[in-house]
Every structure is written in structure tokens, then in C-alpha cells.
Length: 138
Image (cartoon, rainbow, N blue to C red; front, side, top):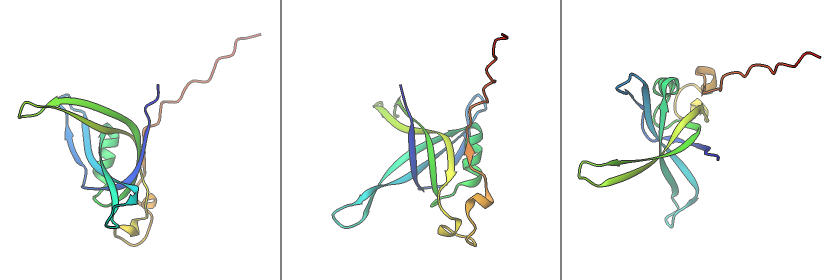
């Protein structure tokens, strides 16, 4: 089975950082992702996608991302169900970020025109290196 999601969009708000009861850091933010078409009034149509980042990705998002920045996120789509305060059951779809990268020049938001890549690293949740295969002796 395959569950891969890749998005590029602008942050709708600054990331929020909190800690779980077990001490893990989690950041949440929303990406406005353009659908690539316009509505009847000629305005661009966007989807507002909730994103969750854990641990080091959460720290990265909170430290480096701000409202309006263009970012690329890849991860997995997750659904969860909860009971709201009014007693109704609700289902939420969200992207759990694996990698977060800057996708636009710094000058598109503010600053002196240097690319974000010069100012901050991207966060990539790389898999641990695999040991080399051991060959049997002849």
C-alpha cells in the first residue's frame, strides 16, 4: 500500500507549537494550496490543508516558517475521528509532514532578496542508513 502526499502552498498562519503529555513536540499549520483554476469571479480557488509536524520537523516549522511563505511539504495523509464538545462525531483529514522545504524566494515575502536556502536549512526526515550487504565468503 502507498500513502504519499506532496503539497506546495503558502502558510495561512504561523505554526503553533505544543507538547504532548509524553513530552513530544508537535507543530500545526495550514497550507493554502492553489487548485490551478479560477472561480466565476476570476479569483484563484485554494484548498486549506491542515499539516502536522512532529519532533524535529515541528521545531523546524516553528522556528523558520511564517505566515505567507511558500513551502513544499511531503508526508502522508491521515484521518482521525473525535467527538466534539456538542457530542457529534467529527472526522479530520490532515497531512503528517515528513519533509518540509522552502519553495519560494525570500524576496516574495520580505527581506533583501536572498533565497531562504541561504538563511535556513530544509527539514528532511531521512531514513537511517542501511548497512551494506554482507557477502558470503567464497
